[in-house]
Amino acid sequence: MSGAFHVPSKGTLTLEEARERGRVAFVAGIVCAPIQDPGFSTEACRADESTSALMGEWHRGWTLANLAAPVEGVTLEYHHTDVSSDEPA
Image (cartoon, rainbow, N blue to C red; front, side, top):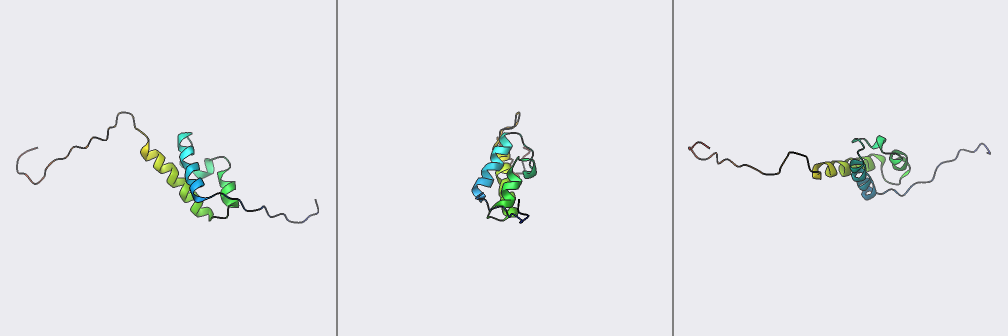
């Protein structure tokens, strides 16, 4: 090694890829923290995009996957009560 400082080349991680990585992380059971996603933080720091924006998109992907996932014992049935009536519900 010549002693010269080596600057790693920029990566190609896109916002869309970061969002997908977050979704995949949720499915894999990784907690909602990009630092826990192996290799993601390194890729995000080397990417042309803003690291903050990439982490935000990772969170978005994870959160959307979480919201879309079924929860055992919970249904999406909605019970509406007409509060404009004087009659008891």
